[in-house]
Image (tube, rainbow, N blue to C red; front, side, top):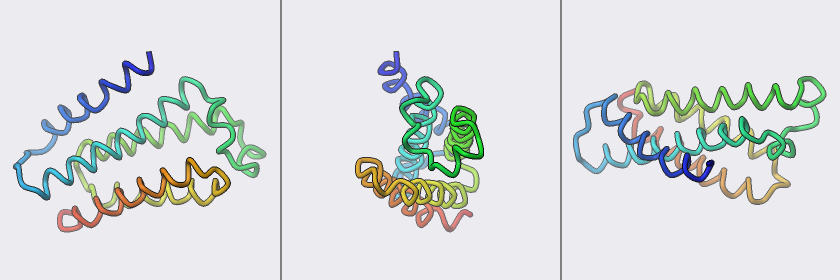
Length: 141
């Protein structure tokens, strides 16, 4: 089931994005669209995993957080934040700010999980994508 959802998400994101903002086919617009879709997909995918199988993400929750809040509740709240960020990116409004917040969230996750090499190297690439999106969309803040 998750595999089928993963295949359909980028298509749905592209269709939504085309209707939420007039698309002119120049290099900057296409780059911004690709970065918006890629970042939104990463956040939606992570939230989907957290909602469907939260135990997978337990190892990424710092001890100080799990001592304050139940792990499942934290993952649901954080997954909600990820969905909100994804929707914000897809809507194409204030993309500069959305991409900066995305970069900060991912930077925080990376710093708190430096021991997880797989997460760290992926997050660094996604952070760079978020910063590139912020740079490309800085004119339209």
